[in-house]
Every structure is written in C-alpha cells, then in structure tokens.
Length: 173
Image (cartoon, rainbow, N blue to C red; front, side, top):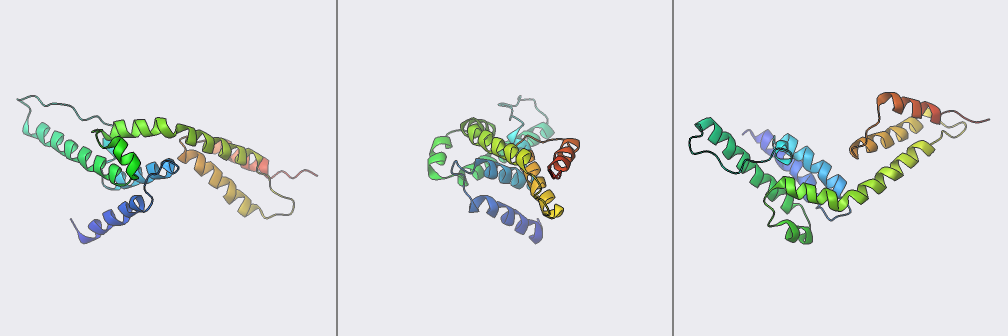
C-alpha cells in the first residue's frame, strides 16, 4: 500500500472519528460512514449478507472470497462501534452484523430523518426570490435544499427541481 493511499484512509476515517454517532447526528454519520467505506472498497458489507458457513468442499477461490468478506465485516463493525458514543456502543457491542446495526439505527432514528425531510421540503417550496434580489445566491440556496433531499434519500428529478426553482423566481407585482 502506498504512503498516499495510507494517508487517505486516515484522513477519511478522521471525519467519522471527529463526530461520533450520538443519536442526533445519525444522517450525517451514516453518510460519512458510506463515504469512508466506499473509499476503502468495503461498502458492500452494509448490503451483502455474509454466508454463515462454507461447504467443506468449497474451492480455494470461494474460501478466499468468504474470508475477505468476513474480515471486511469485522473491520466495518469495529469501525462503526468505534465511532459511536459509549451508550450506543454498549447497545450494539454484541451485534455481529453491520447490516443489523444499520437496520436498527435507521429504525431508531427514522423520525429524525422524517422531520428533517419535512423541514427541507417546506423550506424549498416556500423559498421565493425577494424583489430586486440577485438570482444567483437564491438558486444556490435552493440547490442546497435539493441536495439535502437527495442526502435524505428523497431525491427529486432534475426537471422538477428546475420547475420549482423557476417558480420561486416569479416576483408578484
């Protein structure tokens, strides 16, 4: 592994270590976790279940793939636990699967996501360009709302985003 690659791992992981999951920051923590895991080529661990056992006659390639998956599961689970506050660590320390941990956390914090999504949609549809105000900062602000909806797993199409932005620039006389 080159020195540059090694430094990239630490710089990305530091994002997670800086803001440990405490409950109120689940969406940001989860987004950062996915970014780190994607960079480390381990993001599949959050979606692909590790088979429980291999057949005794499994090929060497199958065994190697299973072993890599197992090691990645352990790494991801430990990373997740290390970047949680102590109360959440205690709650999840005996859960072996990162998929189970994420599923449980999503269920626990889905109300937070719903509230944030509602506030973002409300801000987006209520956003109006003030009379004589420059258009560029207004569009940037609205694009922020649209990006936030995408982050909340509630993306809107480019066409709809354009329509909403155009509608917000209509100044009533």
